Image 1 (cartoon, protein in one colour):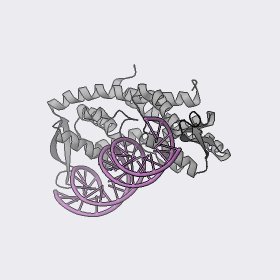
Image 2 (tube, chains in turn blue, brown, red, yellow):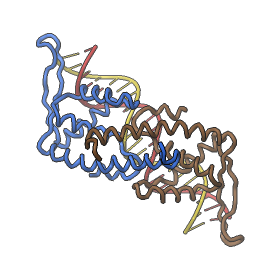
Image 3 (tube, rainbow over the protein chains, first blue to last red):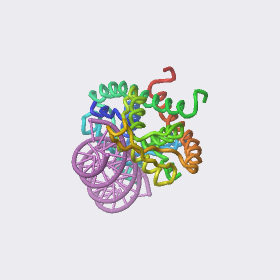
Image 4 (cartoon, each protein chain N blue to C red):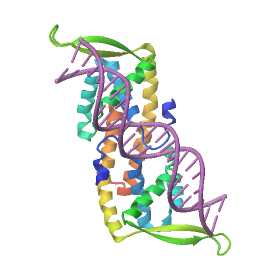
Length: 128
Length: 128
DNA sequence: CAATGAACACTATGTTCATTC
DNA sequence: GAATGAACATAGTGTTCATTG
């Protein structure tokens, strides 16, 4: 909620990413670096390339707030390639928060789209 | 152009404001505080309230780059209420730059709208 | 080397203070 | 008090460095 004091210009990247990460975790367990790769692929055509740091920040925030569980695991062919990863899944509270967050973000995303639509109309006219 | 290295997330407030200010100056002379008031009124329903500082920054930037002319003037009933204001108008180069900027911003605004539309669709489905 | 994480640095933007008539 | 402007402060985010198996 304090996150939505952001009654200013457009929404912050962090909030945008958080929504996607919530969704992904909710669908299936996964680890940070994987999420990042997927997001980058999805947004590539929009010229948007999120950084790894920003992804971790979201994940750490969710962890701190008790909204996700962390689970260590070894990835790779057994014995050969040790690579520890951390799998995320939503806690019960996390699921509830995701629901709420999603509702709030709908309003926020639409507000922002309104702002952009207004600008497009104001400067380039009604027909696009 | 360096302004559009901003191949990241959403566009910056400064660029957004600059486009509006260009447009307003182009239409009629005016002064900063007036622009600000008008913008605030227009965006109020979107929960966006630009600050005076941000407005001045745009204006100073345009001045520094030789894109607008400044003209001092006294406002108010003569003799009674002295209030110096600064009127802005586009220089010839400013007009050209405005054209160019407007073209670039169209692309940028549409890119951003695409990002928001994608998010709205990804999270809330095709029917809205 | 891939993944995680922290530290540090920078830029955009907002808040406060100063000045002038 | 309205308008302009500068100075200062903070937040958001990116870049770099560190660690681990």
